[in-house]
Length: 250
Image 1 (cartoon, helix red, strand yellow):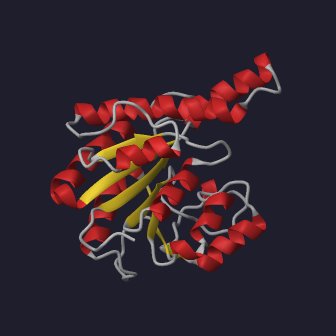
Image 2: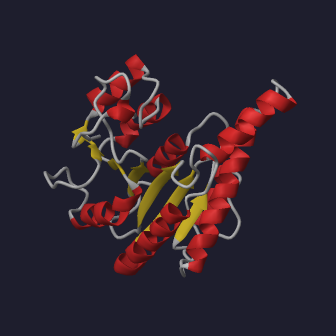
């Protein structure tokens, strides 16, 4: 466990934010997040380090579908998806450097490589894609947050938060829950809904004893700056402060 004076690790799971279902890159979302990261780093300077986990998104799905239909049904689809996430991560890393953020020019390919970047105080932000087959960007980010004792986890959702489990199609919901708790995470594991912001693997990680007390939230990319600044300023306590998105009470 790091001491209270250590930098806060802000671990963001950006998932498919940059790569739409059709495989196109959302340059607006990428530019917006780069700008918000820059402002966070300016406001808190040496107090924080940002870790951004980028998913394969639509680009990865296109590659996997192509391989399945045209190459071989026995292709290593997980490996293809991870490589697509590395491409997306490299694009975002370039956008951050253009914004003046000190970040890695090469994308970590393993947990050991990531640890090397995180131990280097020169980097303000470390960007990565997938590290291990079978893990989502959310579960990767949650694992990284758990491995660094002074961490916050921000899951960036295209729908802006977490909806109720009562709907068959949660994408049609209009109201985002203000908070969910460990009981809610257990319901996801039991019911395994087809469409949900949180996947089962991530829920299992967040339910571990090591995750207790960690600050976690799901929000939209437009709210990253507001949500993160509010959390840091409030000391990440379980306050009644209303912020865009859904608090995951651990």
